[in-house]
Length: 476
Image 1 (spheres, rainbow, N blue to C red):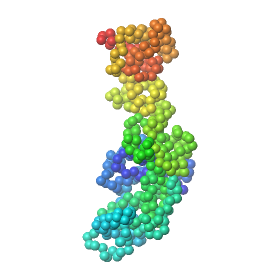
Image 2: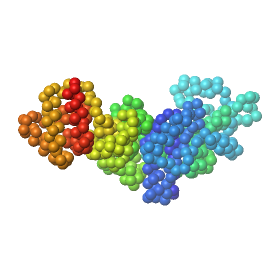
Image 3: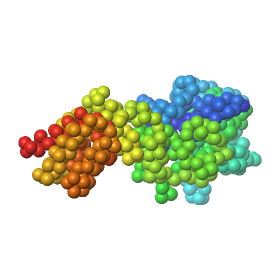
Image 4: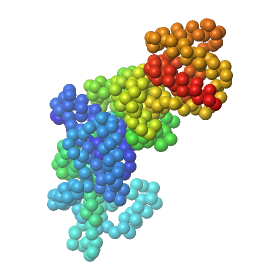
């Protein structure tokens, strides 16, 4: 059987972290079967029937978020709203076959049922008063809703790939509304019709939809359609075990991008939230496609831990291709300093990358730490380090500068020998020389190693920066 999965978000806001994980699981399951099974497809459906909350910006945020994560879908995204005529068509078929009926209950009657159920401490269930009633007795001028004629005996069983086999007594499920009085379809109906028409074989979604599966199964049965295989994955909780909120990290995918996380790192972390493969923590995308299956999805809720996400991202920062980081860096640095980087600046950033990537956990941190490579002379010093340049400090910097000027081979080992020779000759401590050199070369004291910086900057740029500072201090 060819596997077809779907991700069906509502465009009422950003693509949140839980939705991203759901999309990832659907994508991986489809890709696994595409590569190792009889074929697989991952489809996207925008459930945009709620026009009061719908925005084009939200749709675009979803599309952009999925694309950034690398979760490309097949074909065009399906708009549920454009399929309203098809939803109504199915309801007409159900009315004709006796699987549905018109209900003329007034708001007052429904309120009475609700109040009675509340007084008895029961769940509100529609009492079916129009289920077998002659439509000729319908009140004039009242537009009916259409309800499913649900089975009243027996049980509805769901064989869920994650939750296992669960059954619900049909007497606890009332006749749900399929079509509202204004002829708009309900969520329950639209989802079933769309899943059937799109050929969805596996519905993988959050377990907050688990109870919906029983109602939706009854619609599938009424239409004589094959039900998809359900897999309801546990929700993501905060690190403290409470409902995931913004303070825990329930942010939009685009926010994590802006925070400097890599798409592969975020996908790796989301994959491990509720799915496991032995003790593996770092799982590359090709490995995830090979290994992913629904039988390894955990039943227990996962906990979102920003520190673990940060650690995962740090690993990807150290192992990803240089060109990916360079492209992200040049774009981020240009935005930070306000202009496009020169080819010389890009070259300095490239040479300094090996040392910087080990010290950064996110692209944002990497941009901040590499800014001194990208800026043009003269370097602007941080305010809190300007006071270190007393006469002794200027003398040490000047002496080291003279030694560097005489150096013909601008290599890290030769630079280290030059500094060591100066320290032995003057009896100075390394910190007394390193501090002034750092500030002269970068404008700050929080940097990689001195010789690493000198090599990355190159002879002319490094000497020029030191000379700039000496001249600025002589004129102070």
